[in-house]
Length: 83
Image (cartoon, rainbow, N blue to C red; front, side, top):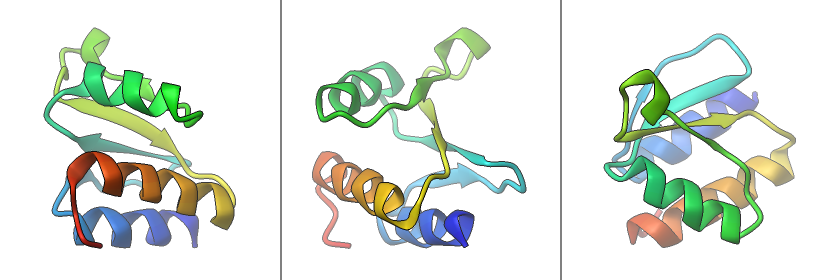
């Protein structure tokens, strides 16, 4: 359910992501390091993927419904999406 919740939110924001069956999703945000820092400042922990040669991407873990809602709300602010 959490994967579906995050996937639906990412689609609303027009963000590309790698479909997953694990407890995380890798998302192309453009400025992976910038998103990582902004989300950290907002108290949302994600992993930058530049160490894997994917500087445009971040990896987000699936959490509880409330945690996923918080992640999506912060991503919405950063992307300027009206999701």
